Length: 64
Image 1 (spheres, rainbow, N blue to C red):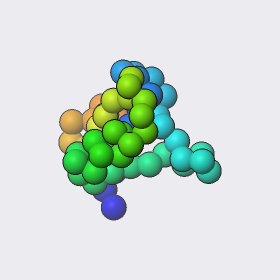
Image 2 (image 1 turned 90 degrees about the horizontal axis):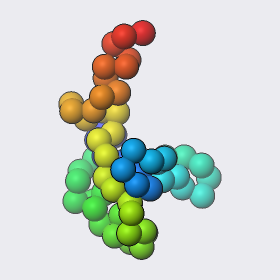
Image 3 (image 1 turned 180 degrees about the vertical axis):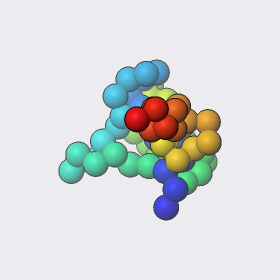
């Protein structure tokens, strides 16, 4: 499964975590938006996941 999208608590905030502490990733934006709407958290936003081509995580990985 590709990790293309993730939900954050607010812009540049921490990632939403499941009850067991794991981060939930999504393969498509529509599923991520539906999950975000079910959270009932008005400040939550979608962010690119580490496998997304526009993610800045790729730059950090290449620098190491």
